[in-house]
Length: 81
Image (cartoon, rainbow, N blue to C red):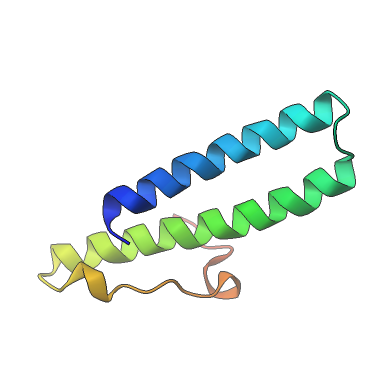
């Protein structure tokens, strides 16, 4: 995935987050379902942001950004900037 594809995926996931929050507010889904789906989205977002950072870092030091790989969510969760 290139940078534009990653950013598009992030945007889509943020929109999904908003839809989930709206769905629970309107009573379309329960809070347990929302919580589970939001957790999945948050983990996927963490992975996308990490991949984007890896690509940018590789580019800055003259390496091939296409060598960046998605890391497991257990590894990227909890990173702080």
